View 1 (spheres, rainbow, N blue to C red):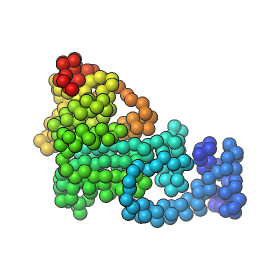
View 2: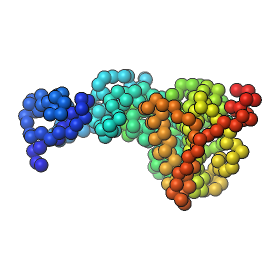
View 3: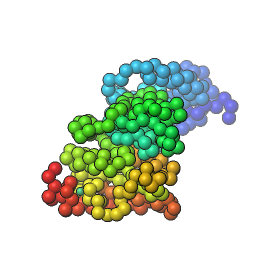
View 4: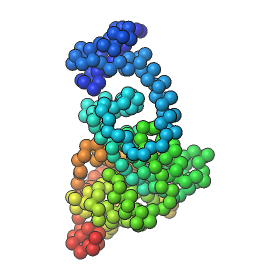
Length: 324
Ligand SMILES: [Zn+2]
């Protein structure tokens, strides 16, 4: 296979083709045998290495620059970003346009603990344009097994700021901001109104209910999760389809106690965090709004079960008697 170059016809037909070695000049002009469009030159083996070098250099420049807004809608995707997202772009239903649309999205993640770390990591890697991370806590030694964005050297630092710094290194093409204080009601209202999607990764019921109430008032779709012991829950709540978190209040044990009291199986929060990231990307990239649902994960059975979230007419938040 030595001397043979594999090139990727993108954005035309996304076909992989093998070509014999050509001079760089002729290589650039080679047309795809599948669709006759000019094949992109940088997916030959030689070009890929050159692009990786350029990416490393420019990442340092981008990281040190001040961002003022999510990446502007550009067409086509800049070369370095094309390379960064190349594996995702290979998916049959994922186009450059879809990637650019994702870069226009703004996501608020409340809580940068065991759920927030994996969720933010994969949203950043997928290319969500602007992440706002909120957490008023500091990194502690007992956080490290589950909160994978932190290291021993981060102990004592604010979680949101430490996570933002790490994630910016992971993806220099997006904007990541940190809110290092606990959000009061007014701040939460303002930040939720700003975001396209809200992820509740907090570890306390009061915050979850506040997010639920505000999202209900603003008719915003939001995602959340909760875990303790060997059992976890994740949910998507779309106020337009009815139902909210408070509708679950009487259905034990849908809102289990925190991991501080009951402990938590270490991989469980990672699994739920990744699920949140996946559901968020589906909402952001597809633009489809699903009906509200709850998923229950039982570790011992290695099983997910999903049920539709039905509205409770007597719910104080979204029911007929609600005062929101
Ligand atoms: Zn309700």
